[in-house]
Image (tube, rainbow, N blue to C red; front, side, top):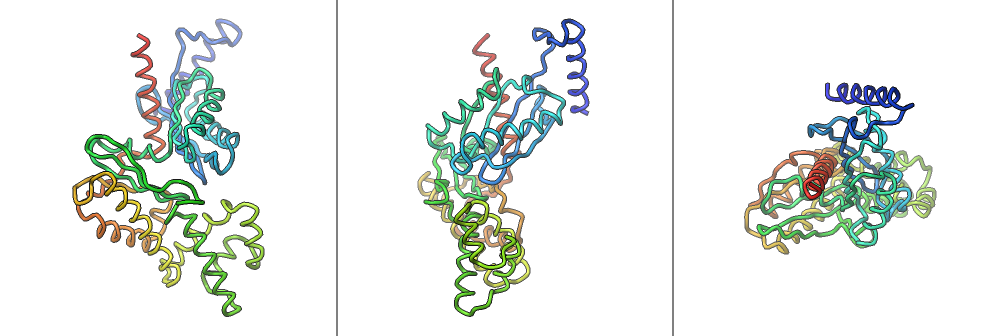
Length: 341
């Protein structure tokens, strides 16, 4: 119903603009403001569009937007593409965007964040733009107080805050130095293990054969060539194969997922110590594309976290990371209006 109302408003506004000046808008009286939130990483970019009443009026999805993996121009293009889908669904236009918050992996460094901020400000002229890391979005969705969020996706990390609001993170430094327990990390371990198995016996293991089918390769030489050309297009794609194999009883796949669960739990354990939360109650939430793909993995992670932090309260995120970003954009616009009034 809200989408239909927005579309009707858009048609009315455009018709009025045409009537009063050959299509020119009456900006002072016919303004529809929308707010965009983005959650982007090494695999995909998700967008949520909020209308002025604070309800979701559109969603969008596009490719990867981690600038350290796909480049800054490609990352900005993915944000624009996801926004275009959400705007079209809502019957709105880019010029209607009052504020945009983009939580993007790969923007932890100030220079990266500033570069993306400049690109998105140019792409959405007139809109307030805020860029932050994708890790900050789920933490902002939780109620105030001590909390940790574990992110398990293409990359991995944990981010948390203590009772005083101090925020720290563990991991999330990229595939070359961290991302332990991530889908990328599982893919690396799975391919290495499959290649070793084939080298020892001259025959591919069942998991190895499934990986080759998933990648559309005839042999491991082809796989290695593709890894050399673009490893981001190979390693994360192996995780779904491992997930399915583990649930089907493959022992090597289960071993890989158990190891990933332990590595992810170590991020939480380390961060709890750094925040002074070890032994104290705190909210613990999980998010990321690895979750819900394998009952074996979900159970292993739940057990590992329970053993490491029995005092933690496992809580769901009240809303998704892109919606959290959209809410930040909404508040950013409200704050700007108050300061300008």
